Amino acid sequence: MTAPVSRLKIGRTARAALTGLLCLLVLANLLPLVWGVLTSIKGDADLFRFPPTFFGFTPTLEHYERVIASGFLGSMGATVFYAAVTVTATLALALPAAYAFDRFEFPFRQTLFMLVVASIPLSLGAAALLIPNYVYFVQIGLTNTWFVLPLIYTAHQLPMAIWIVKGVIEGIPRELDEAAIVDGGTHADILRHVMLPLSRPALGAAGVLAFVGTWNEFVAGSVMVDAPDLKPVQPMIYSFIGFFGREWGPLTASATLAILPILIAFAFLGRHIVSGLTKGAVKG
Amino acid sequence: MRDTRTPFLLFAPAFALLGFVLLSPVVYAGWFSLQRIEYGAPTGYAGLLNFRRLFDGETLGATFGRTALHTGLSVVLTIAIALALAVWIDRLRPRVGFIVQTIVIVPWIVSTVVATLLFRWVFVNDIGIAAYLIGTVTGGVSGLLTEPGGAMGLLVVVSVWKRIGYAVIVLLAGLKSIPDELEEAARIDGASGWQVFRRITLPLLKTPLLLTAVVLTLSNINTVETPLILTGGGPRDATRVLAIDVYERAFAIFDLGSATALALVMFAGNILLVLAYVKLSRWRA
Image 1 (cartoon, rainbow over the protein chains, first blue to last red):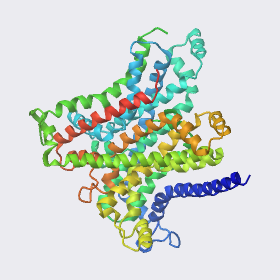
Image 2 (image 1 turned 120 degrees about the vertical axis):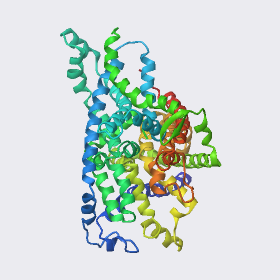
Image 3 (image 1 turned 90 degrees about the vertical axis):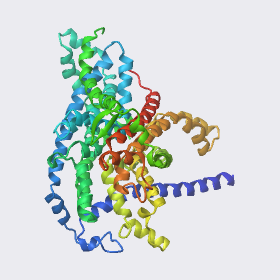
């Protein structure tokens, strides 16, 4: 009788140790972010103090003032605009496409949908796609326009959005569209009055993912536009590295400002992000 | 409904955009890569010149090697840690599990630029907090970012840290889809926790594990920001991986010819991964 008991005990200690280790891992996960935010509100004297301190300094907003004076809010505004256009265009294109794939029979339906699925990871291949995109868009004169980034971003976010929205439309009973047709409704009516309201959770999930993807994009934003008022947030932070050099105060302040909208979106719509990812379960 | 015109009108705008942004540039780049490129402009047919020039100086092989090392290590470590976390979260009470999951996801939704910048700050050689902590433990001065091995190690750490959240979500969804009865039945038959995991859970997780591996490989190979901001490819080319090589060819030394050729080689590799992804994702129209 004693053997199982001691085995249980060893199991318990091992489990406690393992739980402790995993908790530590989860906390270490947040350390760089917390340390960055703390740095951004330290004055220069506290910032370069060695050994580094977590507490006992006078918080200051001087680094934020410098970052804002360097035009960071303009970049944030431009990125909000890009994100708004991208999210709207992505959802407006995804809903009818998802509806077509779920409710209609047409030639090459499987092949065409396979192309949508294949485009999901393809848009992850940023480094490989960027150069072709760049040389082609230079050739046809699309670089340095206000719409080139939303155009690219919408194409990157669209396949995932079609996939997520189609998953939800599958669950909407066909009797509803048939009833609408009997009442003399068109496909546009079905889209507006049946699909749009009933697929709202999927649109929310796809929309949040598109927003996060647009807000965080770097490579296209850094090479497709030059004009300062067209530069999105991430390339702006990168150019700050050259501009501020080893001044970590302004650098961490700009990083904190750039995380803020994402954390706010996450706090309010975190469940949407998780459900969108789980539905698609497909992007890195 | 048998009606070809309506569905075509419904999906045509989406496909037009995907064709224009994802497909037509690759076709154009295929033509562009066969031209002699002077000052960024094509000046006449040159055959495979741009592709042959990739092998000038014999640095490409080493770059491929570093890319394989960085991506291989990052993918294996990400999946190992994410699997442990996912199994743990799956056993927590739902409310606690959701909180832990949320914390784990945070690095994934933060941009790669910001994440890498903050890591560089934490590990910066003289005044970074990690350098200080490592220094107090080892008694020496830490110079992770200035030593070739340390820089590559740190590149792997950032890549893993950034993507654990994604892998946890996919694996957790896979774990949740395994019926509890299977594991319970095995336990009643006397199987230990490890045996249940090894013989039941792991085989049933095969598809999500492979899918995660494909996506992580694709995203690690193609990420420019992490090496660009963490190390700039240094010290002494120790972290010069494919993504930064192609980026610098195009936008630092303005050699668009060889940059396009290399990008197309990468694109061909990406297509192989995309095919694996399509096969694994079990889509149906």
